[in-house]
Length: 223
Image (cartoon, rainbow, N blue to C red):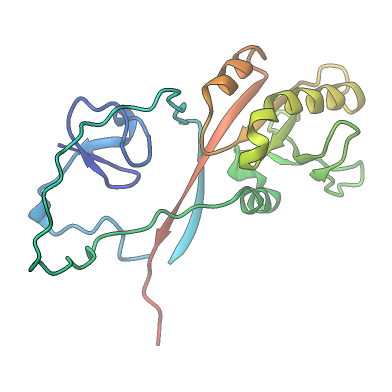
């Protein structure tokens, strides 16, 4: 039995992705400990919300998997409704505007050494940077001072994000770069449709994806 290290879902050997969060078992699963060990999947020593970005994004399966049909048993007339399980939890999520706000304050969360694009006086200009072909959520410079165009699309904007990214990168390359400067794009999302993955492959490595997840931890308060 394996257990997903991201969401603590248990599943059998041979399953390649976690059935709950979709992360690959090769990188995000470990042998599950005995269910009777009493371990708590949430740390008890720390309450902060931490945003973590990674490159490990699971492509959507275009064809839904068929699940085996089980014959339903007739409900007992005398059976009382079972109480909700004490361990049941609801998934937590951030919307695109919250992720943009975090990256505007701390762009280095996306990549070490990354900072907002600034003018010659050092005034940051890289948040909601306007261009004639569309706004740039985060315009940044990496540790080598190359330009990075960052888009955090909402669900209804995701399908057009690659074409929009290429237009914005083209504008930055034409109007802001000096000789030798490079421009690359990063799309921040929690999933990548298969068609979008093909579009990025055609961009020749100039555009990449970053996924994100965040953790809820608890700590004691002084009273």
